[in-house]
Structures are given as structure tokens and as C-alpha cells.
Length: 288
Image 1: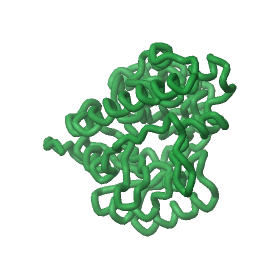
Image 2: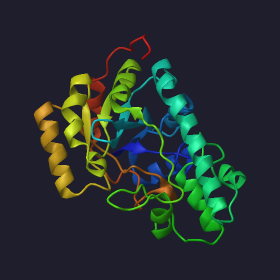
Image 3: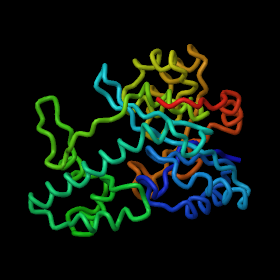
């Protein structure tokens, strides 16, 4: 049996419902799924109960959108076996989710001002059932309006380009103040979870690993669709040096993914799940 340790639903920026993900998991022979929606633990308790009916273990998880302020890079931190709705996670993630919502509204406002025939109401409708509007939802509105035929294509790069190296930012790029990745590790530990560094090759986060280990980092995502063989090798070296658990996941987003992937396609094996369970610590009552 395969395991899936990185999976998003419509609650954040995935295109699939939890029910659809369960169906895919059954088709692919996946026995364990970690639901790791961005910056929220919404509906995790219900998902865990529904999973039992399908004989699939749902691991309560989260992916926190963090930042390395020393190196000016995004850093995503995965949390496994967390207590859903724990105060430390809510305290850290709710304000950021609100900032994301305001930023998304500004993105759409700028696009409309530039002549794109989309509406904020349509973007919200596409994101219905989730925690807010993401860039994928805005791109879906642009696809419907006939401006492009793909989420991650030339138009996406043009509109949301961050700039730098002499290049101007895209008209829809709105900077968001992310949470400190170090606080993300702490919040996950407070919530009784196991913190793992997500796809370090994607955001070039290897330099931050020693700092995160000091704070309690327990694992590193080695196998990921956007990792090269070099990224995997580097992640393995850090894992071995710091005694971190090597994890992997497809980072499943359905139609909203940067690459087409199958659930369970980056399975690290049941041994990885068992290893994560050995790193679970009692819940800390204090808030950040």
C-alpha cells in the first residue's frame, strides 16, 4: 500500500473535494493520506472519521506558508498529527489568511483596471467552500473569460511575476507578509504535531535547516514532484546529518497543481508514517 503525505483539497488551493480525493486514493491503493491544506485545519476531524469508513487513515496535517526573513525566501512547513483547531495554529494562521484574502482582492482589482473582464464575485464563486481566493482561482476565472487555457502558463508568469534581477513585477503581484517559519515550527509542536520542511529544493531552503532543527524540526520532504535528483540528494544529506525523517508527497492539488501528479506517486512508505508517529510529543498548552 502507498501513503500520501502532502495533499490539498478545495478548502485551500486544490481543485478536488475530500470525497473526490478519497475516491482517487482507493483507485491508487493509498492507505494513509495527510490532508495538508494551507494555513488551516478546517474539517480535519470530520475527514478523519470519514476516512475510517473507507479504511483509509487520514493524518491531520497542515502546510504553513512561512518565510525566512534572513534570506528573503518563502519556507513552507508541514505539520503532521496536529490537534485540529489548536489555539497556537489559529493564532498564527488566521491573521495570515485574512491578509491573503485582502491581497487576492487587490490582485483582481488591478486586473480589472488593466482591462481583464473578470469579477471578484466570480473568483469567490470558484473558491466557494474554501478559506479564500487563491491565484489558481483567479486564473480559473481568466481561463473562463478566454484569456488563457492553462493555470501555470505564460499569462500566470506575466501577471504574478515577483520581479527582481532587473525585471518588473507583474501587474497582479501583491506582496503578502508571510509568517516567520520559525514560529510555524513552534506552533506545530505546540499543537502536538511533527514539523517537517516542505520541498526545500523548490524554495532553496537548505541553508535554514540548522536553524529550524534547533527549534524542533523533525523531518524533511525529500521526494516531491518539483525536486530534481540533486534536490533529493541534498535533502537526504541534511536528513542523515541531523537525524531527520525523510518524507515525500505528491503535493496533490488536482487540476490546480503545477505538475500533473497522481495521489501516492511520491509515497515514502508506511515506514515513514510509523517514524513520524514516534516523534509525536504531548500538546503544549501555551500559545505563541
